[in-house]
Length: 218
Length: 218
DNA sequence: TTATATTTTTAGACTAATCTAAATTTTATT
DNA sequence: AATAAAATTTAGATTAGTCTAAAAATATAA
Image (cartoon, rainbow over all chains, first blue to last red; front, side, top):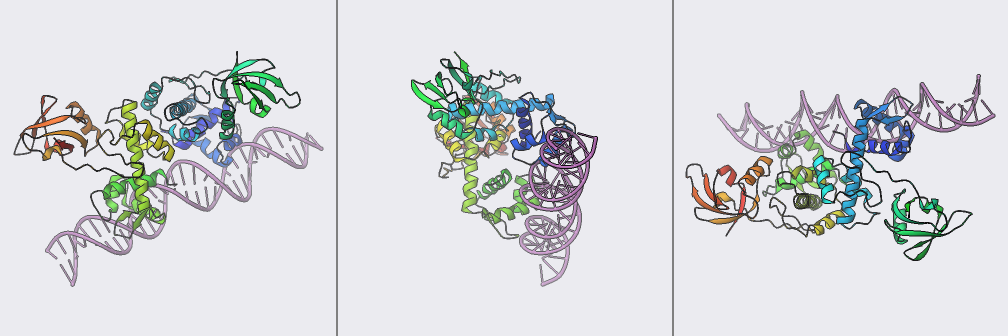
């Protein structure tokens, strides 16, 4: 089996590969995991020995099928536990990440499948991120963000691109949670600040905030 | 915070202290944790530095109040997760120990309390072991075992003293699960083998098995 | 295209937890 | 009480993961 640390590296590499990057850089991984590039090099060698990644010195790293499978199954666990924490234990969406980060590593097929069933086979986690099914398939929703809309357009909030506590907490205060309907009333040309309608209330939102909110036009 | 390993040592020392032993021996701990006495000595020194145990060379080890509190809270977690796995995820009572052994270390006050509430504040785990309350108080039930009964006595199964998969599985086959009523029909004088009535069925059970089944007379 | 900056790797050291083998202390036995 | 046996501790080594500092490779810029 793989250690927690190995699993965290695989997950980090998986996420950094999502932007279509070929060959994830040592520095990028070090940044993501808040560690040093030299540590990353050491671990990459170990993962390469275990055939979880393919790696050539100085050329970055890519997950193998085997490595990708491990990463996806951890992400599946993580997101299922987040659903559990929010729906069953009444945690808020900005509180669950760190707990799920620990729970995700208890990686037994049977537990995951039972949990999935208990939760009613959810398709998305509390942040709108898709939950891989048991064969590892993920529905990727198109990345339309609130900032892509023009005046007069309406949309439903379906996810976030930024998962920090402060951002999630801020959104909750604005009632900008999953499933809520928004309408663009006005956009400031200078800095793309938006005036929008949320639950019949006028809200002002910066471009920094609006470009991290994933929506679906209606 | 304490590492998983430290927590496992504290739990082991706690359990070995239950029989009223003053000064748990290095060898006993090594046995329980399937490790070597020399490793135990090293860890004990570390726990002593952290004021989690009191220790004098060659004289065995005892938990301090602080160490005992940690041990009890881990046991509380363990038993709550076992209830969750059996009652919500439909695991069988012989399947949950190893999973709970991992889940117990995700030790945040808030998670434990929310889980407790979600489960309806259970008092016992699926093996009949008492769940410490949030202040660490444990109801210890009297240790009357099936083997203590005499011919004609009736009792209800309330727990087990042995937690191996094979024992639990065997009990389940005999329908000797928590809450079931039993009546002693006959006892073989030679080896204390018992003939008992379970759900109107005659069952033969060895002394080895009957002395590990905790019951309450009725 | 040569020099400079950046990225990545290597070398060597550190910590936590473990082990084996040897030394020491305690306990049991004559 | 002396000696043998058992339990415990120490000394020194090992492994996983990390780090700093220096060396090597790649990318960028004049």
